[in-house]
Amino acid sequence: MIVFSDMDGTFLTSTKAVSVRSLEALDALAARGIEFVPCTGRALVGIPPEVLGHPAVHYAISSNGAVVSRLDPENKTADAATALRLVPLAPESALAVWDIARDHDVTFDIFADGHSYLRRDLYDRMAEFVPDPSTLASMRWNRTPVDEEPEQTIARVDTLERLAMYWYDPSDRDAIVEALRHVDNITVTRSYPMNIEVMDKDASKAASMAWLCDQLGMSAADAVAFGDNFNDMSMIELAGLGVAVANAETEVREAADMCCASNDEDGVASVILERLSTC
Image (tube, rainbow, N blue to C red; front, side, top):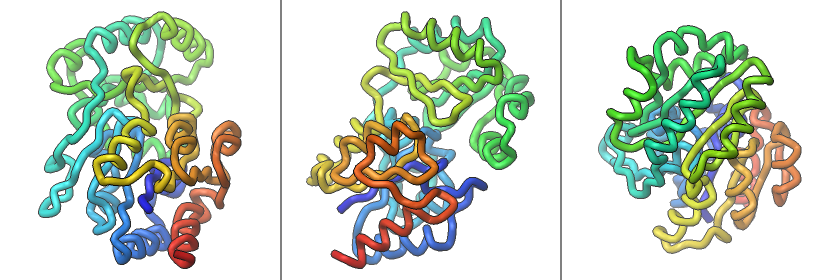
């Protein structure tokens, strides 16, 4: 068995915490030598340190599958990790998305090189786009404000991973989503009701999950995958056991093999501990 889990809305509580029971589940996996792979839309640096540093965690999938990383056992931080698989977003695709977004009042997060960058004036306005205090605090923590235009950020980074736009006017959302239909070589998803996420057309959590399983001599049929939102559907559908938390989007719950309790009720931890008790 190998366990893949989304973070926000799934493994983490609504206050973005790792619960005591979730840590117990990680401890139980480590004791059995079973891998736990955080599989998130966040940049690698945004994965909570208590998750990255846990003995059950040796790999991470970030930026919605654009990056698979191996953690350094002596320094289990994002900046010391090694990227094993990259599915970068082409700079020309990122610029095409920016040309669309710049005409609308939205944020423009650039995920690159394990980090997330946001123009400082938009970083300072983030509360306008993200009303939930816990989500807002988390986003501020894992984003770096920069004093440059998005095209400058796109030009200077080494590896573009994905883009995100947060909106508060549905008309901006609708116009952007429609315009993105005409941009080649991208895929569009979301992990929050108020955002739009863009990656390379070949980047997905499922593709990186399958790749990592193969590298470890396993099959996706051996995997248990947990999620709550549209960016999790591909891995939930591919895994041998796809599990949606109770707070998941309706379509995600319908795609899953089973549902469990919500992220605030230790749903992921309960399933892990129950499966370990029977095998």
